[in-house]
View 1 (cartoon, one colour):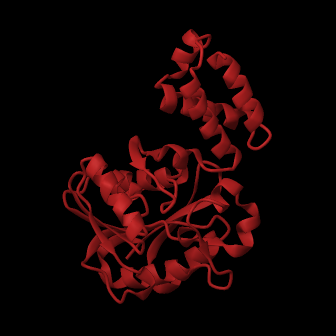
View 2 (cartoon, rainbow, N blue to C red; view 1 turned 135 degrees about the vertical axis):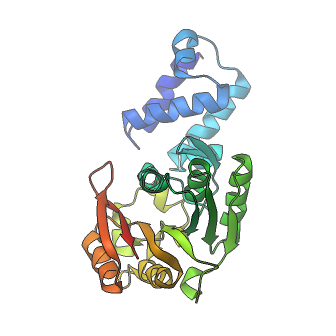
Length: 281
């Protein structure tokens, strides 16, 4: 069987579960991971025959995709802000909306000569590692409750040659933070249980619920706690940044204003959803 023939089979099986464009995207990701080919290689060499061993690898990837296992977990990696990150099922998969939050922080802080940053709920470490890579003057720390996630984040920092101080802490139980910061950022759990019906199976059945969901009757629990800690651990004029639930933008703004934060800014993501907030102490 040629690689072109297999592409037709691969996309035909996946298109009903995702869509044609997504199925083709999965094919080209698998092509690069399994054969080391780019799209141009495929165009020039798609009549080459797949060996028996290669076909077994392709079938394994296809089977997992048919079970809605995220392709990032299949190959153990994801790309975020031009960096490669190891991912496991103990970590959320980094998303493009979060890249926008990172870009916002970099843009607003790249002229500062000294900078102390804390990321709360770090997962893979994609936020603090990307910030440290692009703000070399910054001292960066990151907190997570999961020892397994922190182990992945530490590995990602080492792979990307970045220094981040990782700390295991349950932020909801914390009475203080390690020091004073110029910037505190968090992408905490924010999906309400009532929204599970909107979640695709590849997320709902595979990504860690600890990092995703909050109770319907207290959806802003992490925002409230982090804001309270930030009142005492941001330096004067320091900034707090959040990724937020798209349905709770006005409520999150009101929470921060009630806490006494100034210059509260709500931004939409590339899909037009309320997705990120900044405010100043």
